[in-house]
Image (cartoon, rainbow, N blue to C red):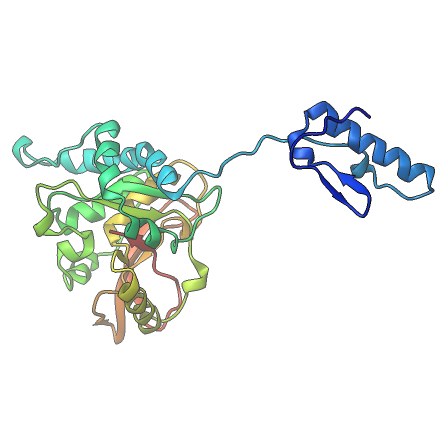
Length: 293
């Protein structure tokens, strides 16, 4: 074996050791092959994997910032699909503006502060259920528009309930949509998980208490709104879905009594592709979807 001795070799108890990191690839492969032959000659068992050397290129895992910035185009597409339907019923001067994905991405660069990135790590994610950076509403929408958004996101299918609008009137349109009048004119964002966070299941009180504790350390965390769910629901439009894919439950809103039960609003699209918006009893354990604001 031809190994070049360079600076850094050590002599200990009469044995010279050579740092292989300083050798060429061919020299390192030769060293492994010679070690394998010596072992076999001594009757030692050499695992098959030990007889070969695989040189792999190190792949750097994208940072949270890079992952979120890369999701802007998809997030803008989902948001834009909802807004186009809302704008169709508005006069031009009242329409909600939609920018190009490249413009949103440029603005998101500054929006993604270190504190927001730290908070984003608390949201559930997986390879097929990523976090999405999505524009936030810049103008108010009505409760009727929120309901219509769910219908359009479910390919026009919405379960009929004659008392739905009366029920939803227990909360303001801004509470259901997440629109903040103080942000009007700005281009804010939200980060929405597409995964259902089973670990956060619990009663309304349990989940609200948990969110309040989280917000003490991460004030950027919040509960996803009913409108947010309509945006996420579009990700599964035309395909098979589970109710968890778009489920939102407003555990942060005050419950109201309906037919003898204290409930908060919730919405989702079932696996039959029908959307539904109704009340969730405070004792039910389905997990609200959290978001980053």
